[in-house]
Length: 83
Image (cartoon, rainbow, N blue to C red; front, side, top):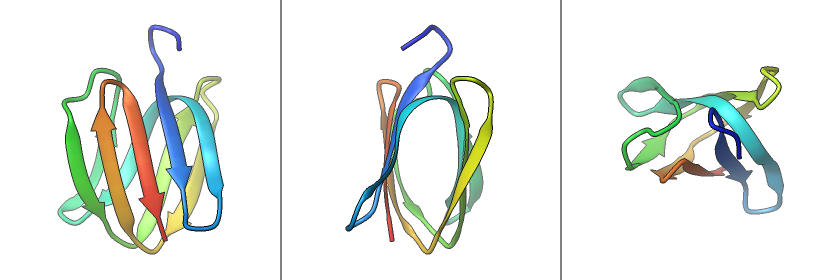
């Protein structure tokens, strides 16, 4: 992990959709979209239908459409469980 990246893992019941280093992640929370950057405070949140959008370590934007799920952010590790 470099100085500017975090570890992101996006999983579903069937597969690991993404696992790697990212610069930022934007998630569809119940109260609206929110973005996680390096050194974000710990949080657990419910996700609603929308897109999980992230910038990988090379700055390329990628996204996954989700129906809902949960996210746990702790110590620059972002774990997303989606359906």
